[in-house]
Image (cartoon, rainbow, N blue to C red; front, top):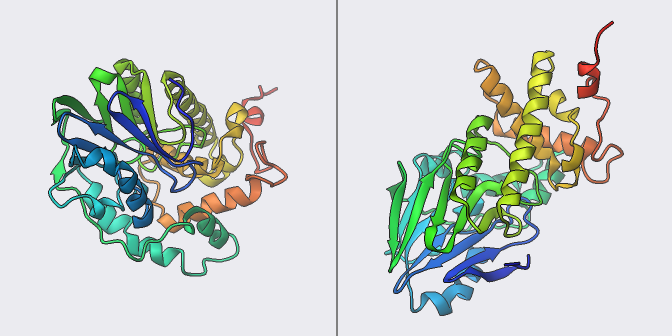
Length: 340
């Protein structure tokens, strides 16, 4: 079934809706609703209260008869959790271990409200403004999950079984997939970015690829990604191919002694050059390096965002080198040229 990629609520299978938020870039995330006979499961909330309130209001004709009994946060990024306080008080909130700590310590609404309000310099400030400026964080009261998903489990939503599969660490430390077997449908969270560049905050990348293999083994007909249009197994395979593509180049650069920022800057995007938010390759490369060298110092979040902003300023949309390989001191083709 073709699902138009337009803002709002779309029924993607019997009793299953996806909330889509084009264009799927930074902060513009998807969510969903799974209904049973007399109750509903909400999959994720949105990046701020205004967006979440709009979504819940649109869902109200459905949830008035089938109240939201449970909410699953697929992972701990704010664009999938910051609207949690707007669900009914009786709603049980489920997430993998680590999500609550991440929301409180690493990515709180207060932190993001401060980040978008200060001058971070001529390169980082416009990047942060583009990524997070459209959202409001200063009025968010954080509600963290109260039930941990520590292994594969089942939720009963009315007369319907919903399977919860913790598949992290991958995109983050705590990724969960929601599988509705009777509809052959999956909510993949940010294990899937469709039309935009995946970003690996945790890894290792082998674990993310294994998570995608698990989704493929479920053989779903309908897959709702964390960002981008509704997809099928072709979308999963495309993300899998991207991860392999970046991993191979990062390992080549690492073996050649090139630091992670220059490695990311010099990568050939090949057929993935059309994906938006290509600068995210910087963070993914860094975390591949961390897996290869556990002694690599932990980079502060501001350093990772600075790396992405510098990448975008050099190779991003509108730059002279957009989509190509820049003169960063290396390239895959140069390293792989035979000697002699």
